[in-house]
Every structure is written in structure tokens, then in C-alpha cells.
Amino acid sequence: MRIIMKSSKQILKVLIFVVISVQWSVSQSCLPDGIMFHVQADVDSFPINYPGCSIIEGDVIVNNQAADLGLYLTNLQGLSSIVSIEGNLLIEFVGSLDSLDGLQGLKYVGGGAFSQYRC
Image 1 (cartoon, rainbow, N blue to C red):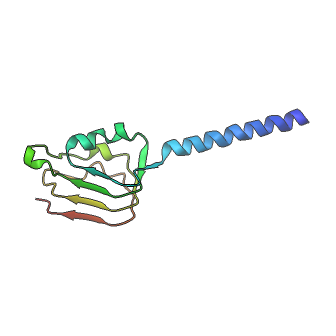
Image 2: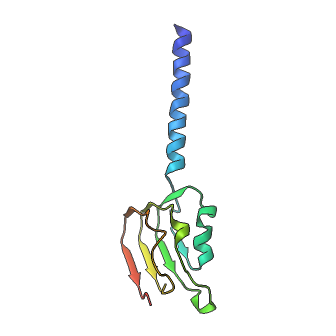
Image 3: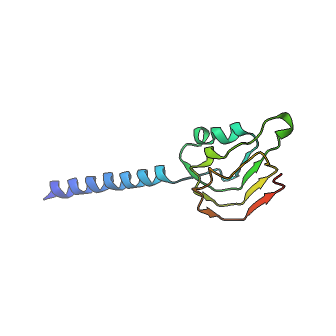
């Protein structure tokens, strides 16, 4: 009887660990100070630099400040893993974007969503 109880406890511990691990890998929060995307390389490298990051705790700012250097933001596909932004979403000065494809998985913005000067 003791062997069965000990075995059951071990199985329960392993099961709890697996459930927690799976949940952690599916939905991971990151970037409490937020993040800025200024050039396409910033967007494209997001899933590499922040693997598993789907909940951004801070603000997300998409701002094509490098456009005068010929470095344009052309798409947001690299952000497709984001499901929640706890802070604000600000998209400004990005006339080079044809659409917001890449943000279709976004379900929640905790602050506000703003767009400025899209020309």
C-alpha cells in the first residue's frame, strides 16, 4: 500500500510539472518595459530574440524613425505570436505599411491602441 501511495505521489508531481511547463511554453509574458520597432529587422527578429513571448507586459511602439535612411517597415508578420499587450499599442509614422497583418492574433490591449500620421 505504501509503494502505491509513493508511486501515486510521484506521478502526481510529474503531471503537475508537465502541466505547468506546457502552460509556460504556450503563453509566456515578457518585456515589462515594453518594446519599440523602428525598422523591419526589429520586427523580423522579434520571434528569434523573444521566443515564446506572446504577452507583452509593457507598451509596444511601432515607429518608422529610420524611414529617412531608406529603412522602411513593410510588414508586421514577425509579431504574429503576440496575443496580448498589457500596455499601449502605438503605431505612428508608418506609411510604408500596407496592412496590420501580423497582429491578427492580438486579442487584448490593456491600455489603448493609437495610430498617428499614417501617410
